[in-house]
Image (tube, rainbow, N blue to C red; front, side, top):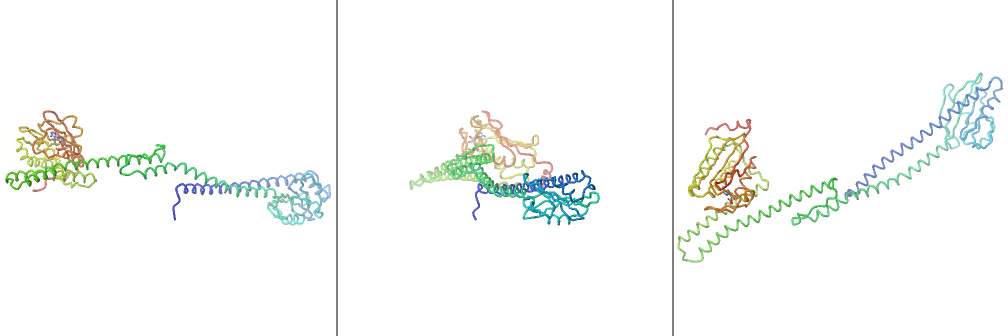
Length: 499
Ligand code: ADP
């Protein structure tokens, strides 16, 4: 089954909630009206019987024969929709008033002559009235609703003694008017609720449509955004409401994606550019070597040496690109182990000795601390080798390169200094960017693609540290790597292991 739209669901929920509350409200209102109208009827019955009591006490009953006396008392009671009556339990006669419309006759008769009662609003005929009064309790007041002539009648009966007479005083009130009011109220509710419901559902629908309109606009725009149009943004009507915030978050996401795509594109372009140079040189050397059959073997060897040199450079670039691409993809490349940074640094200086000697650059290591650390030994070695490699590469013959490793203020600091020409201030900010080269005069054996420092920074970052250019001027440059010192708890792991 198809799920209805959010708009339809909101309208239906709204309608259901309205239906429930309207039904509850109508039922409560109806019950309240029914109950309070009955209460006011009961109150008027009570007042009528009180009045009857007072009237009986006004005259001395002993003076008159009860017959005429009781008939005269009820004669004075003329109510609309109400009838009062007195039953003499001894004679079982009922003396009842006539409920009138106000202009009718004031006939008051004994229960035996009921002709005038035909017009009564209280359709409680004398024989029934007598039965009712005779059955009423001898000592307690009795309030009940009886049905007479198809109409409900509320009846209050109260036992009463007057001298030697044992009487029952009664008042009856026809509920026809009340029933009619309740009936009309019920009709109004039954007719009104569906109308209100329809209005509520329509209102909910319009409200939802109005509020969800931006979603439709956003959906339409989002559907058109692709890799080539990542610069497009969703419309934001009101940045403070929920939809506005959603659109803003989505736009931020698009911004980040756009940036990532742009970086990726740039990376691809730079990478292919860097790869093209060695490949072109290699194929040129090979073409030249093969262009004549009688090339001397020395020339062929030189061509092969050049090809090997470019192949090594190519391999280095490909390795660096591969590492950065994997790091970029968020791959877990670190294989940490407990090590001594002092040892790693000393070994790196050893490894770079032949390179320095070939360029007549003095290479020194300074540091006598063990510097226990947990990290990826291969990557840390690569970081230091990149720095040493650069320092030797860019330092002219006769210069000096130094690697210092020490602990300082709760951190490890490793510095590579050289006496090279320094890096131009304009280039310093972008030094650690991929494929960036400062464009200064390079020494021999240069094969850099501008990836060495980018890799060094990634390695330092991924070990919770940092790398900066601490100093660079005409007297040389110093690159500083800062790594976090392990806490005391983890330092136990560095207890020297037997060789
Ligand atoms: P490359 O592989 O080209 O050396 P790097 O990322 O290692 O790439 O270095 C980026 C650029 O920074 C180099 O091209 C060079 O211009 C400059 N550079 C790096 N180290 C030094 C240094 N010790 N002295 C002078 N310039 C340096």
